[in-house]
Length: 111
Image (cartoon, rainbow, N blue to C red; front, side, top):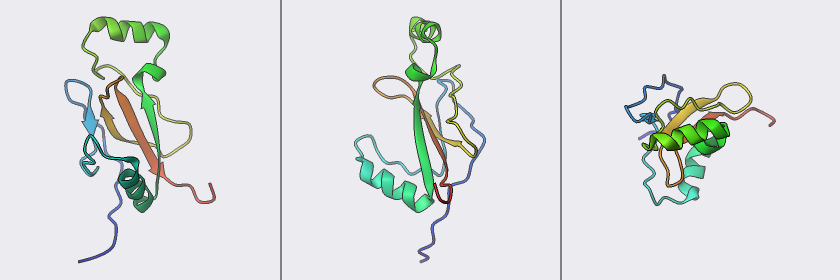
């Protein structure tokens, strides 16, 4: 068995009817997973990551309209990528607060 790590690669995002999507190569960390297994995986993958919450990504009017529709899913939300190049989506999914988009990119040497 090889100890080499297969690096996750960017893929086109194909969202479901609720606006969610999870990269098929993203491990299932489970709902109650602590940060350590995720941090180890990110490090092994050589990734920086950034989470964007819908509630922080929309204007006040857009957020009010999202709440008014009552579905509370990510349908119609186009998450804003973090500043810089190379970001790709790991997951767009619901949380207890609001939908989030989990972005990642390869670590930049010297950063």
